[in-house]
Image 1: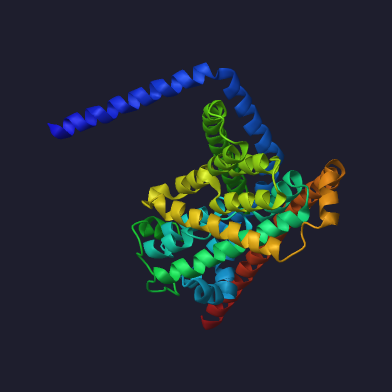
Image 2 (image 1 turned 180 degrees about the horizontal axis):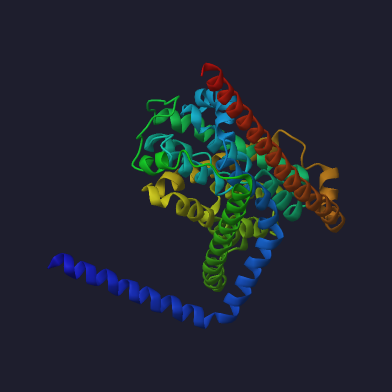
Length: 395
């Protein structure tokens, strides 16, 4: 009877929350419309062009045998450095180079295929969920701070903090390192084993990868709209309470990192503090991105705290590293500050370069993958013919 009352109370709370949410959306309908438009514009201008080539690249890799090659080349050294299984190299590479949420997706793929166990997956999730390097350099450094040096500084801090988390956390939570693929490491292996023998054609791989890429980008856009809308409503009350703009911008960064960093870059405060706050925001990544990551691995019964706590610590470490680097470098000398003043010319100059770079990188990625798959197909046919000749000779 007591459990029944608790169940009824939960359902009632859900109904009340639904009514309150609907009421707020109706009251702030105009503000909400502006927030959604702003989120879509931000996504199309900054997020989509910086993520599309890398998400496509990751999806293609996860559907080919390139992962085995990466394990042979980098598995041993990465296993020693981060104390994780040798066949986890794809998760680390995509997590550092391809951005959210591809590191988590790679972990989920490895786990579902039985290549890593639950403990190894949790270790990887603490440090492979990082911002895309082109996003930090171009979107944050150039588009927001109008200085490529700031982008490079933030990227160095971001990567160093992730590596510190990876090296320390994985050793604090040590387990047996698996250097070869074992069967039945988790409950999803049976399905994986059934699909082992299935090989997709080149065009099926590309079609599947493009479809998965747009699904991932659509999910990212949805989360950006939701969390920006949520903060927009909260921000209305923060303004009425006369909360300082610096605090409001920092809170914005805790919700959604792209808009948060934009708000921080627009503050009329010391440039060092602005960059340190942005560094913390990128390290923490915001509740929006953490939700994206969790949605990728939620089917495998991981906890959101497995991501949330390490990301918050990474944000603090990243901010500290940024502050130390600024104090020991002359990144904000007089010549750099002059660049900040000439923002329009600087922005347009690098924006054209970024557009060309994104287009070129996408074409190179597709051509390289096509070449690899063609060579792999030729090698398989050659091996098949050799096998047939050997069998014929024996007969």
